Length: 131
Image 1: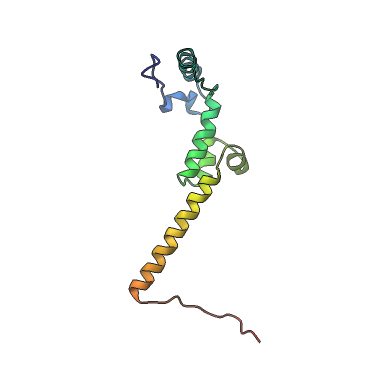
Image 2 (image 1 turned 135 degrees about the horizontal axis):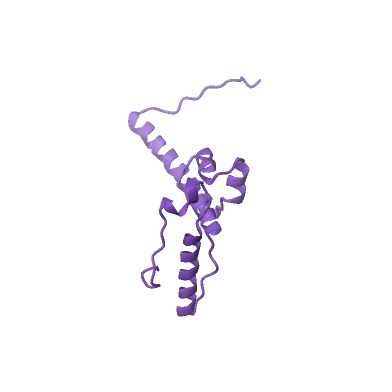
């Protein structure tokens, strides 16, 4: 998009002021605003107002989907409470749940296949005798 709008959007670590996590410089915000305005001036289908804060939500959700450790993500986001990171900034949908369930099913099928090849059956242990 930036090639057509006459500018480039810098997404390097230099967007942070004084290396403080979460503080976005005015320059980055101005680049983003300029690109959105140019896009909306050119095209009929308008893009919504995207702020750097929206980018934080997207970043957090994408990192959770990629499997990042929640405590690591909390640190990177600069939150003192993990609840803020997971409940406010992370947005997952039914598609994400379905993907996780699909991966669990694949792992279970692979385990069963491995046991079948090895000729082992699942060992069961009864802890209690039913009377």
